[in-house]
Length: 243
Image 1: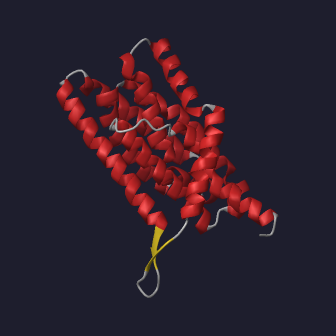
Image 2: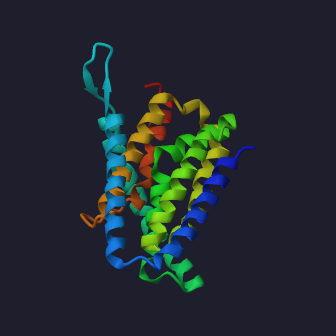
Image 3: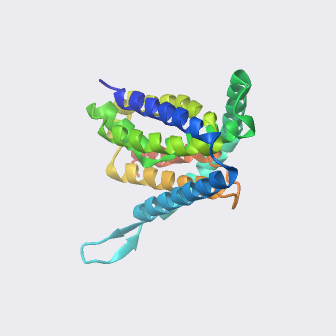
């Protein structure tokens, strides 16, 4: 059934967040801080590894060459401008605050947990590729694997940031579900190169999330979300203009 991968993913996030929320009250603050720093460093390294994989490739004669750098820069700039105009991060914050008011729980970290988890779960390459596979071939395998990772991460996030993490399941449902449903329409333009470029931009954003979580620098990753789809738009425009 098309979409089952996203449904399982959403269920895993909610289950993990609920489980983590029980551990939150019994975990001393110093342990929460250490765990959060460990998770943040892991997020940074995941972003770095994905970025390096997208930028560098080894030729047949063993030479390492760079690729996709210009499209990465253009995507981040154009996507950032579009996201800033749409105020995506601000809207995510407001949505998190709205949820917090409705359930009257979670404290000041509710919105942070909601926004952070939403970005981590939506930005990665597995979210894009897995949703496309589910829509095009009805193969939810990648999303099943993502569900396990997200469920475990949700436990850790919720134990440190609160139950707001559970509500990130809603944006994940909308985001991955939309990609799955639209997969058939965009299939002709999803070449290996385009998917690689989209995954590269997503990896850069993941690195930005990790840096923000470490309080090194507040990066408006939410406003850069449109950057992920710039390589696809760029490719379509090139085809239409026969460039």
